[in-house]
Length: 212
Image (cartoon, rainbow, N blue to C red; front, side, top):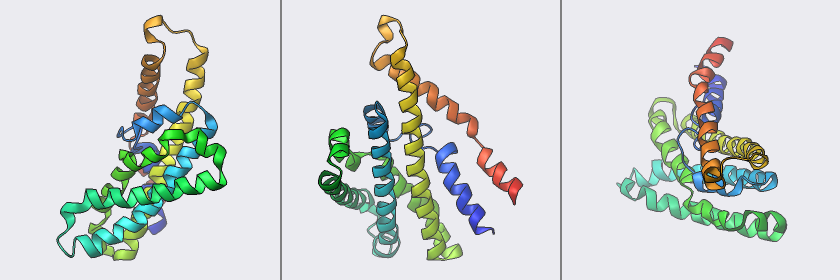
């Protein structure tokens, strides 16, 4: 097994093939709410990457060594949400202190990362997808897979935000029919953007396989 090829497949698949926003439709609220401005899109994307990475780094070993070992798997959602809430609060305090302009730009959507189903989905699915590899390849490899998955998912979220930010700027310059102005044309644009990502299905695996 080529370890780096495995990591590359996971990372780029999370951006292009399994994009949590445009393919799995998780995290739509901040995707639509913050993608109006480039700086806010970048700030939100980077904040989500940080939360996803740290949350996965904390929740994966807790799930494997604490919850599964003691029959507490049924509390997974509650425990994961609490961990994410603490991390978001720390990031919010940091941005408010050191980057106040970005803190004001993100507004209410920053604390909403706590309830962002994209972040929760990554932490839960990382456990589901890679916990079996703990027995097959050891905890270290499975843990690295989960971390790469979380970073890739965050990068996919950032890519979706930046892409849709450009789309929305083009939409603002257009003159759609009256019934489509505002939110309707935004949703239509989001749907068309998500359709474009469906063309990446199988692309990453084939490219990685050809390079090996």
